[in-house]
Image 1 (tube, rainbow, N blue to C red):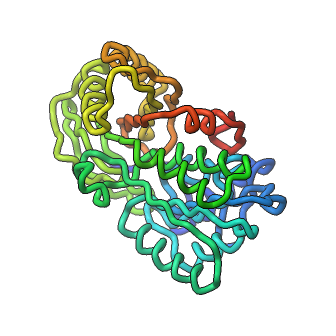
Image 2 (spheres, rainbow, N blue to C red):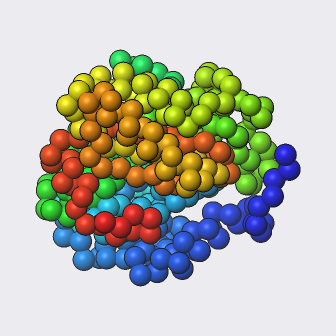
Length: 332
């Protein structure tokens, strides 16, 4: 299918979308040098700060979660591409207010390479930075080999919990510990009913037939190996919830966070129906959903489908998640 998008020169996509974001939410964020998206109150931060990186094209992630009580700096790359290490280092330097920086990186090859190089630069500069990698996609590796798992929408609650911990005055080690505890107890699985096109090239990420869906498809069209006939909302929710419950080894009486993250062309109607179905199914297993979202958080342009995310919650993580925050796409 031919791409139809309201864009200008494809070479200007990153700059124009970042300028637009900063204009819409100019009370919360500002556009920094090189396209950094910066918490407008960062200059007053006498605390640990939180930085993350990632390609543009997945809006509102990642830059839509910069603000108060959440991310302090987002280092955006080109469409679906990691930023360079020098810009990432500049973002870490900008964020550093003397109390240390938590650096959250999603597990994708380009992001990891950039993160590794930026960490070496930060270490050479004598900065206190701890890196946390999110890797919760259960489709492409077992939990025993979690280093091979892709990072999906689980980065967002990690930003929020880390940002809340930093706002409470936790030191860097404790901010890292609570963020890592969440990261170690979360899992995501995705499903696509229609793939996206790359906005800079117009190339399709692949084709799915009208009566087909694929469980496990990655954020950039990576195959998940789970092609099957389209199923109803209840059937799809059960299939995906079962996989997450098994991966997390959830038992009756446990409490979880639940996200239904729309991939870009999934309607609110569908997300609400899927969320409802999942809560009912988990309740039958004695698993309580204590908090969650059904929204577009990390998208893949016009891909139709969603990511189902679950995380085992304890009292401290739930309190941190519920602490106040203010960002373009999440305010509590």
